[in-house]
Structures are given as C-alpha cells and as structure tokens.
Length: 240
Image (cartoon, rainbow, N blue to C red; front, side):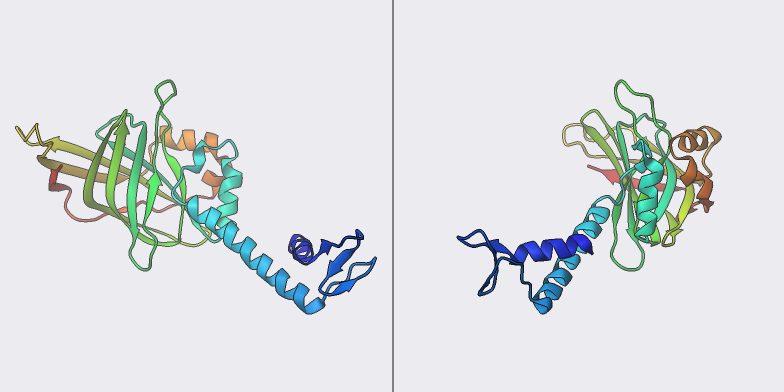
C-alpha cells in the first residue's frame, strides 16, 4: 500500500518554475494533495499492480519449476496465489526428449494448459520428472509431444484425467506413451498411421529421488493421486 500511495502522489505532483511542488491550481512551498483524488489514484494503482502480478503468475502456468535453483520458493508463491501444483513424469517411446509437453484441458471452465515435462539437453543429464503450476480443477490429458532436435513428435489422443485443488500439491504419477507405426505410409507427404498405447502408474524411485533433491519441501507436501487412464489402452491414429 505504501508503494501504491507513493506512485499516486507522484502521479499528481510536478514542479513549477519556482521549484515548488504544484497540485491543481495551488502553488506553495509545501506539498498539497487532495485526499479524494489521492484515494482514487491509490485504488487504481493497487488494481494495476494486482493485474501485473496475476498476469505474471498466469504466464508461468505449465512451466517446470523443478529446473529452478529455488524451486520450493517458486512453488510457495503459486500456492499463495491459490494455484495447484502437479508433480508428474512423462515417458514417450522411451526417448530422451529435449523438450516434452502434456496438453491438458480443464473439464469445467477455461484453463487449457501445456505442462512442461522432463527434458534433457545435448550436454546435460536427462532430468526425470517435473513440477508445474496449474489452475485448480479437473483436467483431461489430450496430447503429448516430444521434441528432438528440430522434430516434434505429437500424439493427439485422450490419455488420462487428473484433479488438483487450490493450494494443493498432487503427485499424479507417470504417463507412458508408445507409438507403433503401421508398415508403409506416405513418405513424401509425411502422412502415416499407427497405434498409440498408453499406461499410467506411480513415479518410480529414481524420479522421486531426483525431484526430492531439486524440491525437497514440495515433495514432502505432495499428495499421491495418480492420474486415471481414460479410454482404451491402445488407439488407432493418423498423423501428418
């Protein structure tokens, strides 16, 4: 509130030719500030600050907080903002993805998001598991993708469903996806078909150990609620 008050004051004050502060039509050697205008501007500044803060939090939704050196502190900020925290792992064709993502959509209300999954760089070790903030609610996992060099392999299938409440940290487990292409296919136009198989389960010991090392306080508070698989274990797909 002090910052908002200071900004509101500065918005109304300027200097005259004699170096004195002016406000409205009054020029004196002392600062004069109209209380009603001051209160109005202070309210506007507070509202603008709130919008900026909430926008910054919203833009951070879906990012992997476990890559930060201060992962636990980042998680706490999202929890105070009544966001949910999702702990998970993603395995796509047993590959080491430079970047991996889960496309999740809230069942009720707006809030589709792209969850950043585990990743590995060219010269860095593969990072198991991820910790990402989301709006609270029930989500359906409708796509997964894996980026290797410049190629992105994406599978659009209804995979699973999970739920997270406001201020809650939920370990939703591991989603494993395997794609088996059909023989042949159109090489020139990049059209191919195949079968996507999926399974869900708890995080393995290695993933839990890695996440505990990066975010010990977060993992200590996490509630285990493994995502539920939706639909058949295998799905016929056509990709382009």
